[in-house]
Length: 244
Image (tube, rainbow, N blue to C red; front, top):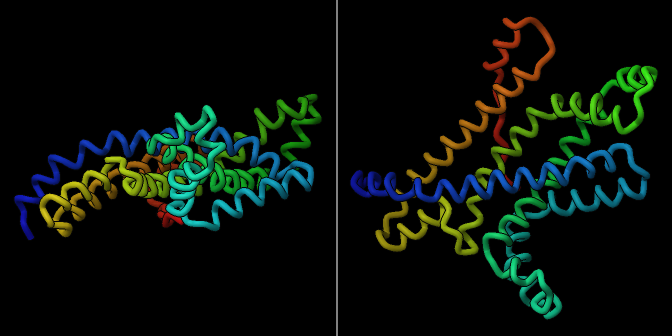
């Protein structure tokens, strides 16, 4: 093992963290905003609408994100109508293709996570809110969704971790995030072992921070038990899921 190369990688690879975090944060934000109405439609909508949302989440969750990225980046450019449209200005840029793909993927996973949370909200709570005279929209916004979000938070934490790791796929479309920078260094040094160990350590640090942030938010939002019991929740393991 060449320690000098590893130290060189430690100085070079952090320059890709900014792009990794940008893709991750923007994808999670766009995916979450899109998933909220889809989750309500999936959980409480008309059967035909719920089926349409299920079809979308089933296809996206059931296929590799790398394949989806290639279909967007390489596939859409083969369609003449796309190249002639105003969207081609965006779709020919690898950053926007990656962001679009990651956002759709995150939205599909988050939709199912929130849907399960919405379905787990006790019906008595909803009935009590209706008895107080709250309209359906206000019940959804003030009662149903906050409870569902707390229920779904541990699973959503796994989605955050998965998206951080999944952002490495952006390197396949020429973007120089952490993995892209590592591949560029490997092409120069021919030392994949040392460089990818450093890259893996950086991803491990980022995912660890995401797990800790999720656990902290979960404790802050928890309404169960005494403060001492909530503090003990920090020792509950959070499992990291693989990227599909």
